[in-house]
Length: 158
Image (cartoon, rainbow, N blue to C red; front, top):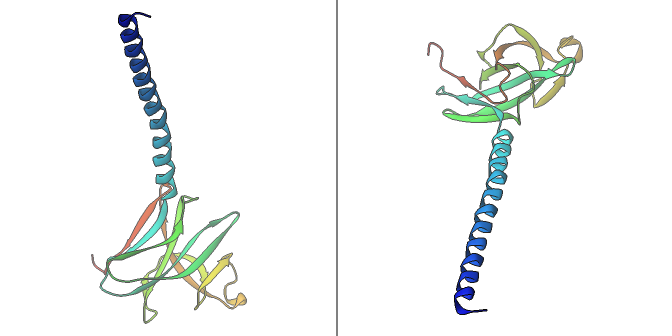
C-alpha cells in the first residue's frame, strides 16, 4: 500500500468510526426518551396539599373494582403535600375528606363513605355503622381521567 493510500484508508476509518459513534449516540437517544417517559408516568400520583395554617388529617376514596375503597389517615402540615396514591390514577373520580386536629370537618361533600378513627383501609361503602365504622360525606373530585392530580385544601373563604 502506498503512503497516499494509507492516509486515505485512515481517513475512511476515522470517518467510519465517527459515523458509528453518531449512530450509537442516536441509538442511545430513544432509550433516554423512553426512560424519561417511563419515569414521568412512574411519578404520576394523587397529591394533597395543605394551603391552610393548620395541621390537617385526610382520607381518600377511590373506585376499587365494582365497589369503592377508602383509606386514611394522612397528616399534612401547613404548606406541604402528602401523596396518598402513588402511580397513575385508575378512575375519573377520587374522593377526599379532611378534618382538623379537633376532628372538625374541613372538607366534606355529598358522597357517603366509611372511615375509622384509626389508620384504615376499607372496601365497600355500605352499612358503615353495622361494620363498626363511621359514615362521612366525602367531596367528589373529577380528575378528568388524568393519571396525575393535585388537590389543594384551602382556608375557608379562599
